[in-house]
Length: 221
Ligand SMILES: Nc1ncnc2c1ncn2[C@@H]1O[C@H](COP(=O)(O)OP(=O)(O)OP(=O)(O)O)[C@@H](O)[C@H]1O
Ligand SMILES: [Mg+2]
Image 1 (cartoon, helix red, strand yellow):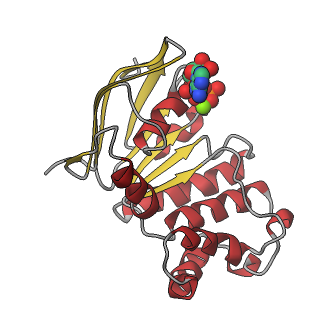
Image 2 (cartoon, protein in one colour):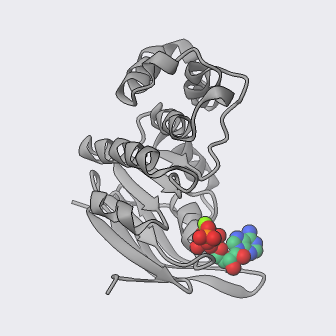
């Protein structure tokens, strides 16, 4: 069976300076993989390519067995909308809106009425332990709660791939554990989860780990 995400010798340069690659990487459905490495080594650049927010200068990316050529903006948009959830270090919640409204916000881009997502949103809020906070404005949440709302929002459309860039960067150890448990649960349900983290203590949760250094990947030694 082909991998969920299959990145083949991709390279990315900015302003003539190569910041990533060539890098090859595969992630299967249900696999939880971490990318670590120093600041500026190319981790977020890689995640943006894997999430089709940006396009590689060279190499290929296959999603669920199909190549997505860099010029195929239509497929990239569809994958981002339907099949990929992204979580960023800054959670970008709407501060004056409730937890439930923030989770449902993702439905806005689907072209499907948000009422149709309601049962799914309530289920995710429950799974992430946020039911008691559901009507609360996002600005009143703790960091860990806010990050769990971001996870629920990313999962609203049942993505096959979840990309998380330092989702625990601003959290204390206990909240970071909550977020890691939530990501582990996603992998256990069959989602491919790719996590960027600086925190070695969190690596015990993951199945696989690669290190990014100066734009290249290696198995940690
Ligand atoms: N849009 C861009 N334009 C120009 N340079 C960029 C751009 N995006 C990233 N870079 C550069 O590419 C390099 C890798 O950046 P990247 O954000 O991927 O690092 P990172 O490993 O995620 O670092 P951190 O751990 O600090 O988040 C950096 O030198 C950065 O300045
Ligand atoms: Mg980064």
